[in-house]
Amino acid sequence: MSVLFVLVAISILVAGFFLFAFIWSVKSSQFEDQEGAAMRMLYDNNIDKK
Image 1 (cartoon, helix red, strand yellow):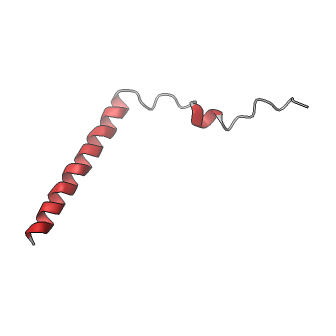
Image 2 (cartoon, helix red, strand yellow; image 1 turned 120 degrees about the vertical axis):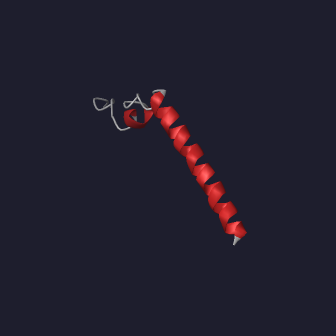
Image 3 (cartoon, one colour; image 1 turned 90 degrees about the horizontal axis):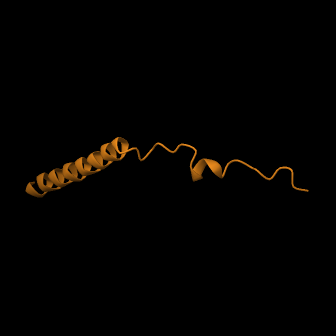
């Protein structure tokens, strides 16, 4: 039963770390480029090629 408490504590620490990393990335403008490479690949700029 004590192993279960250790595993729950570790999982809460890991979840807290990922929550901190997500909040840090949002506040440091990591998601500002919404027209980045992931969206540019959807646009076909070479339609007029024959």
